[in-house]
Image (cartoon, rainbow over all chains, first blue to last red; front, side):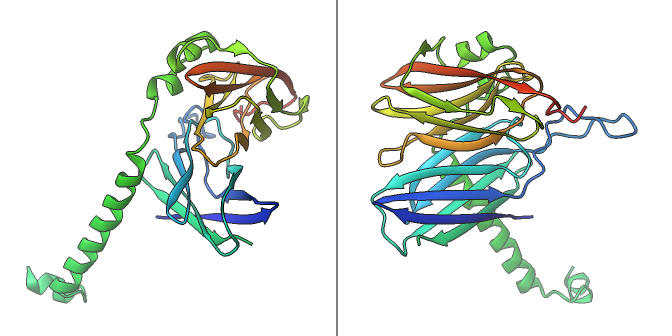
Length: 103
Length: 156
């Protein structure tokens, strides 16, 4: 099942600021449910952001990133209307992505 | 075989098409993800020193890294952390939480043209220091700041 990412990209003074919010449980694997059984780990491992197909940020995450992770970063040399895409891959092999046009 | 597919309302051709689409979807991410090796050992290292050893040694303290974290976090499960590096040629940014079971929370690769400024949110198990580590020109630098946690981030 592919997850969704809410994403915004805004151009100010030549710098594009990207804000992405991913919907993901980010389960560490160290918590236990009410019955005392360990809840299996389920977290985003890799995140890639592209601008018109070119990688502008890549990240490797552990389970210590918060639930429904937020990612903010910025890059230069982009124009209004360009495509920005953020996608992730988690430890179960599930992927998610979101794209937007720079405003 | 054919009869079974027909019974399910999906033709054999249709099934093949679905199969091909799934294979394409599965193959696509691998190509993108393979670009960056995951330092798995660093993510499972326990203790700050072990983690530093896995990412390439103990970093040098630098005043050119600006680490913005709250002094007191009411909820350790969501602690905003912003790392900004003013060191030229910054290529990587790491976020470490000292007393988490595995200190390394996240690692970012900064290509040219992208600002060495990352905002994210991390879990903090208990009151401890959060480290912003920066790799520039192959050398490691760090800044740290303590965050007091009133409610731990491990849902205990």
